Length: 287
Length: 266
Ligand SMILES: Nc1ncnc2c1ncn2[C@@H]1O[C@H](COP(=O)(O)OP(=O)(O)O)[C@@H](O)[C@H]1O
Ligand SMILES: [Mg+2]
Image 1 (cartoon, each protein chain N blue to C red):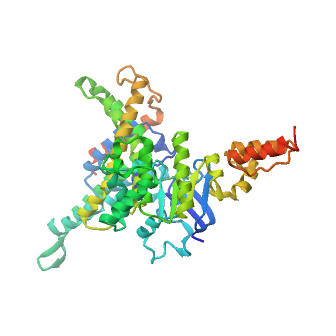
Image 2 (spheres, rainbow over the protein chains, first blue to last red; image 1 turned 90 degrees about the horizontal axis):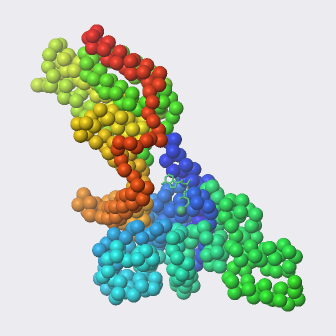
Image 3 (cartoon, protein in one colour; image 1 turned 45 degrees about the horizontal axis):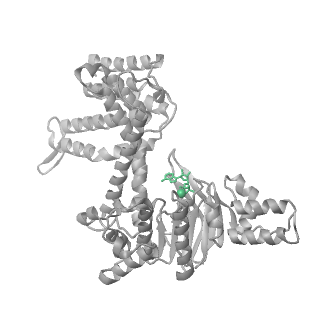
């Protein structure tokens, strides 16, 4: 198990009238090389939870283990850990601060001690992974870029640290559909080609269903459902109860099944679902 | 965490007597009580004052720890005053001697006296600020400044600026917390190194914070203009301030205490 939470709880501002119990007794494990989705309604504790993975928040009680070691034991260097387990916050474009794209992307790798050619190499790698041309962007000011470009630069800054795990907190919030799709394709490719462990926080069911191999559903600081997307979305009732919805494709397949069709409901890409529907309804099972 | 200490320094919601009083009454009372504190000449006066403040404190049901927390920043000044008086104010019986150093009766008296006065000053102010919401405070100030309008004191604008500033303090604290964490996730180090190094390490935090503050200010200005905002004169208010019976009782009690202290000379 790469990352493991054991009975982890977290309270904001404990001992004050503003106390919030954001996480309650969370236990879960994330395997190396997996693509994990964390979903849940706004305020369910998703962001709070992922900030524990790289030691930005310290559990009020319980433990967070990386490679079997408690990250709050004294032997762990949190700054080094953070370059291995990279976290991209929501609206990451707000974190840009340097005069040029190059310097901003170089901030992370420079903090871990890289210099000169190696550093430039990392910056180029990060930018290119996000589909940004190194020569064109390196000397531009991050503040003159478009919103989508800014976000890519911020993401490049994370990738340039060459992490083993990347945590993305609602990375596509506020993006247009095409930008969103492009962005997710890059992530998916990184996961496939570089064997990067990806943890994606979202409340967009469509986007997570066909990407993740494991889903954790949060509600009010607790995990209420977990498993493969197929398993999780099979509990459509429960998903709706906590104010989320299943992907529209799943809904369609589930409705068809309810009507008595012998059909699979655990398909999440349009192509697969279309093939399944054609095969089941166009053939033997004609309406 | 930084956010906690700042947000909590100020207002603790509640519904005690003090919470319900009109902010204007509280502001005036605070002024009168501070005057009273400086009129007190004897320890008996302090006992009288502590008795009154203590009763208010108990009725306000504020946890003790907020007072200790509020006193912490002035602790140094208090101790400094105490030591200075003990060592250098001379007169009366000599209590203690070590070489040229003496602690004398007058020193002990003045030291204790001044320390008590300072502590009570802070405690009184805390009692008012902890029970008054910042918005009510701004409203109160605006009202109290109204008579000065003909003299060119822009009370309304001052109150509006205060309200906006107060409104954005938590937002900016939250924002800075988020940016700080985002840069820490990129390996930024805000905790170690000498002072120059630390100041330079703050740049990744400060630049985005300023950018965001300007963006917010801009958004707010546009939003206010889009709704045809104009300040001053004929504007009506959502919450009209209205003094009730208890407010009059409050102001008379406090004035009474101040006069009593002045005339009895305690
Ligand atoms: N910095 C903070 N201070 C106090 N409470 C917070 C803070 N951040 C989040 N919370 C509270 O913790 C809970 C979980 O929030 P969060 O983790 O941001 O949820 P999500 O990312 O799922 O929307 C919410 O009730 C939120 O109000
Ligand atoms: Mg969130």
